Image 1 (cartoon, rainbow, N blue to C red):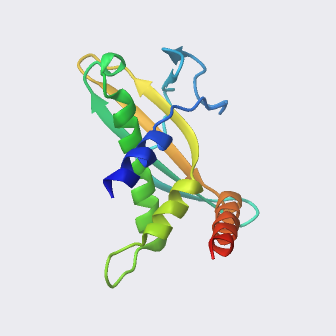
Image 2: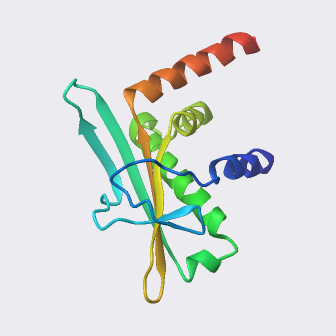
Length: 155
């Protein structure tokens, strides 16, 4: 299990440069954007669009002392991403009787997540790192097709 988890953490820990206009373009160290004033609330946000499609967004945060000089910043960001995946997986797939989810469902949540943004809010004693992941009908449909393709070709 550990052999699977380490590459998984490494793959999802890569910082992303988001092109979302509502967020600040000012970056710190070229990777981490400064958070805007109008941050979404932390937690699960479900929005229904005009075309009756549903968008799921999960925002997580962590407080770190002197985050930009923290040797484990990328590890903290990776854990934020995993927490977002855990939240959406539990919401969408958790068996109500057993409280469990399958590894396939976790993989699907990881593969279909769009990274909306990662940003930092500097504080006087600690900094806050925010991460938002998004799942749309389009990303979920693509993910299902990819998993079905791999399942067929693995047999």
